[in-house]
Image (tube, rainbow, N blue to C red):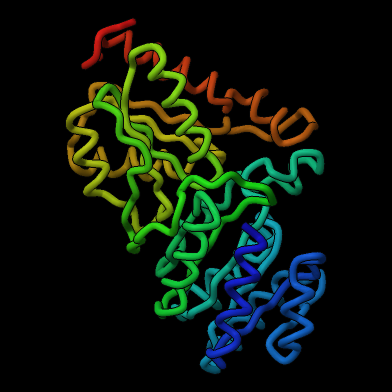
Length: 316
C-alpha cells in the first residue's frame, strides 16, 4: 500500500499545486522519490507529531490539501487534541495517514500497535474514517479525498498486503463493496487488512457447505447503513477487524443495528480484545494468538450458525 500511496502523491503533485506532504520523521525508503522531486511540497516535522498536525492544519487554512503521515498511534493518539481542535473543528482538508494498522508492527510492542485509532477518529466530528483493504481501494480513496473538502483518516498496512480486487473498484464515500457472494448462510463485513482473511475464511466455510458473502467496508465513517440493514435482516452477520473490539467497525455496525431495531439471526464481532498485547512477536504470530486467522474465524462463525440452525445449503 505504501508504494501506491507515494505513486499517487507523485501523480497529484504534477498537476495540483495544493498538494503538500508532512511527516513526523518517518517514511524512509518510502518518500525519497517524492522529496527529491517536490522538495517544496514535502516537510519533515521531526519527532513532534502535535506540531505535524498543527503545521498541516495551517497549510490547509492556506488553501493546501495536506497528507500527514506517521505510524498509526503516532498519527492519531499522540496528537489527538490537535486533530480534534485544529483539523476537525475547522473541518480542514487534512488527510491523516496511519501506517501499520493493527498489529503490523508486532515486534515493537503496544507503543507501536494501532488498535484504538478507528475509535478515536470516529469520535471526531467532520472526520471521514477509512480502512482500505488493498492498494486498489487506497488509490480510489485518495482520489476521492482530493475532491473532498473534509478531513480524512486513512488507515493502511505496513507492507506486502495481498490484493483483494483484481482491478480498481468503483468507490463511493460511505459505501461498502461486495467482494465475494456465494450464498446467504452468513455475511462478513470486514475492513482494512482483514478483508483478505475474511475471503479466505469464506472459502474455508464453503468447503463445509456453508456459503455466504464477504463485504469490504472501506468507510467506517460514514458507514454503509443501508448495506448493514439489508444483510442484517436476512442472515447471520459478522464483523471482522484488526482493531480493539471497542469502538471500531463492529461497534459501528452494532450501533446501526440497534438504531434501526434490526436483530440478525446471529451477530458476532471478531476483533482484538480490550487489552494490551502481552506477547511479542511478528504480525502473523500475534494474529494467531488473538484468534484472527482464517481458521479461527471460520470456526467461530460455524459454531454460531450451527447454534441457530441457519444453513440455506445442505451440510456436506
